[in-house]
Image 1 (cartoon, rainbow, N blue to C red):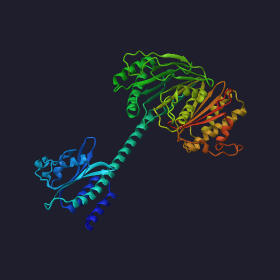
Image 2 (image 1 turned 180 degrees about the vertical axis):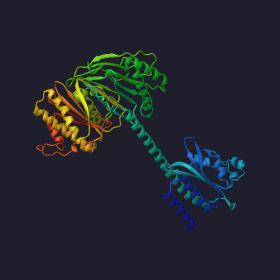
Image 3 (image 1 turned 120 degrees about the horizontal axis):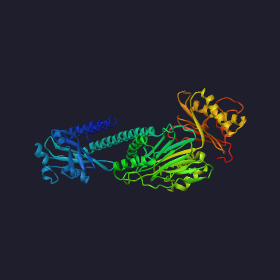
Image 4 (image 1 turned 135 degrees about the vertical axis):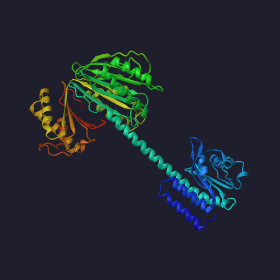
Amino acid sequence: MVFKTKDLERLLDVYALLTSTLDLKAVLTEVLKKAGTVLGAEASNIMLLDAAAGELVYEVALGEAGLRIMEQQRLKVGAGIAGWVAKNLKPLLVEDAYKDPRFFPGFDKKTGFRSKSIICLPLFAKDQLIGVAELINKKNGTPFTPGDQALFTRYCGIAAIAIDNALLHRKALEQDRLQHDMKIAEQIQSASLPSDIPSIRNLRVECRSIACRYVAGDVVDITRLADGRLAVLVADVSGKGVPAALFGAKFSADFEYLAQADSEGGALLNRLNAIVTRRSKRGIFITAVYAVIDPASGVVEFVNAGHLPPVIVGPLPGDCRLAGASEYPPLGVMEDIDYKSARLTLAPGERIVFMTDGVWDAKSPSGARLGPEKVQEILADCPELAVPRLMKAIGRFTEGQALADDITVVGVGYGDYEERTFSSETKSLAKARQFVEKLALAHGFDDRNTGAILLALTEAVSNIIKHTYHMNPDEKIRIGVGRSADQFSIHIRDWGDRQDPGRFVSRDLADIRPGGLGVRYIREVMDVVEFDDKLWDGNELHMLVRGKNKCR
């Protein structure tokens, strides 16, 4: 068919709308207006496919019967001319509607409008049906022609592009909203993680958690009790993602409330089990291990509800034992379970590690599972750095693959350990040096070696103040010092953005002044220097020195 110049100009006018607006109704209305004017149609409409409902939904309708048509709102696929086109994916040119058996006259009878000639075309995007478009009756009373259908097909092509663009834009907005909502959920859950872990003399407490999705079903609570003991809860809600996270958030709130009344493990888990059993839907349950640790004696009272057994490592590299398998089912599985606490005693230098089964289930790109044996081997290699080395090993093992499950690891080391928190000011350097100097001398280092350790400490803290906190005096730095017969360790924690110590520039070692000595000098002084960025907030630098059994 040869199109007239005016017909092509009207087509170009409608095409221009595609680049000027994402208002679907505006574009479709203009398409129908132009097509109706060119082809002299009395009425027209465009319906979008609701695939889930198997229905066509009226999006735009024009002409004498437009408002009446819109009142129908929906039409079943397969019903009437439009429904037949949607079902068979073929266009129809009907000269006399009442002579076509596919025509449904119910609408005409209801409104008084009389349908005569109809063009109905399917609308496609990427070979998928997205709707249908109709022209009804020519104003001059003659039937539509194949030429009219060919021209209307051109207009319908524009309509299909507009619908596809609008649907893509709508989907993108929905994805953006979902991403935004999930990010907020992630931030809320991160805020509930124990970032400011309590400082308790003789206990070094570490915690790491990674969600396999935006939010995790793992629950962690680390609290100092009124009597000075440390209470640790590590739990895992069955399932993943938002449902598990929501269930876990409520469980966490229940735990905090009930633990204030009675922190004894058996009684506490009995009460929690009753709540989870009553609330559980669709088979949701929670595995949990709850422990109370005495910093004065190393006594650990714990109860395990279907969770992985805690692992005890140290004091020497290679030392490893399990705290015992669970004797009880998970919370929410059975009513009237009488949970009771077990007891063990940590020796100085030992560390008890709690974890969720996402650690064991971490997979390599080939599908191999990390498994309990390899996990215990990693933990036992260097007890002092068991937690950060395990998290790094998981990262290397998975090589960036999506995690099979959420991962949470909590380690509590028992022994001679002290920590202090300092403001991120250069004047805090003197106080930090005094704190470490006293412990280094008590450990048995001479003045020369103590001085070297203090220079390394000064360099590390100066880098945090300058590069991580950008001289902001309102931030904080926590320094922990551990001592045993075999080693002296320093752990420096900040809550700033992730930093790479390798980028700090060294200068001549003879130039002794704060800042600028770099990792070069620190590594010369210390036997082990490891940077830890696997925390969910901030960084930690671990430095170990002078021991009979050094961790290399």
